[in-house]
Amino acid sequence: MVFNTGAALLDAIVLAVVSRENGGTYGYKITQDVRKAINVSESTLYPVLRRLQKDDCLEVYDMQCDGRNRRYYKVTAKGMAQLNLYREEWIRYSGRISQLFEGGATA
Amino acid sequence: MNRMEFMAELESLLQDIPAEERIEAIRYYNNYFDDAGPEMERQILWELGDPSRAAAEVKAGLGERNEASGEYRETGYAAKEPPRTSRILKVVLIILIVLVGAPIVFPVGAAVLGVIFGALAVVFMIFLAFVIAAFAFAAAGVAVFCVGVINVVPEFAAGLTLMGIGMILTVLGVIGLVASVKLCVVAIPGIIRGIVWICRKPFHGREAVAQG
Image (tube, rainbow over the protein chains, first blue to last red):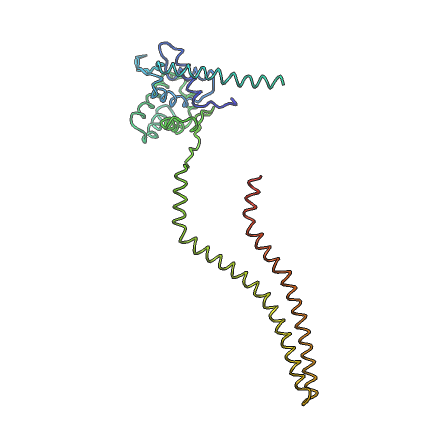
């Protein structure tokens, strides 16, 4: 990809991915889902998840699975508010950029 | 490198962060390998690459949340150099440099100024010396001519010789005087212009940069 993903956009993408799973989701799956949209390395998401957790945007809980504990992530109310903010910002931002690109094509 | 080796090295690389953070990160990566399954282990290890990269990302994530501090690129987290300068720090540093440097800079500066002034004085004195020498030549010529006139009655031949020598000396002196004065008229303003040009050069240079 030509464009680099800034920290805020990556936060937004992770929040969106986690929010799609009502029961919460886990690190490996989050990484796979994020990688459907943008190309991130396997080690990129841990700091993001950890930070979102510290900022109370994500909550974690452990659940037994195949005889071991699996850590699940879930979006908190604060996380949802943050995600909505990111969504609105993204619509405005991407809209303006798209307008510029389209305007450039017709001129 | 297998999973065990990767995890051991990652843990050793994370020894300098708080234990809670280390345990969290190790748990995450253990979970990650478990969830991916043994069949994916090789591919994940290959993609993760060196444990130092994962360790660096964990540590980078512990810092202040700052949009300017780095970017997530395709290749992972790319830390930007944090700006290390601040206004106050700069001012303090400048004061310190002045305090420490003053005992060296002032004497050296005074010495350099002294040498420059001395060199200029020497140049001016050389020209002045030409003028004085030519004037002295002419004056000596006049004096010798006078002595010749006085001596022409008792010793006619010697008097005439002295008068001749005096005239030659006077003419040579006058020619030298005219030449050296002309030299000064040409050279001294030239030297002054040169000095002014050298002194103004830094300012002109700065102006050129500012305009450019």
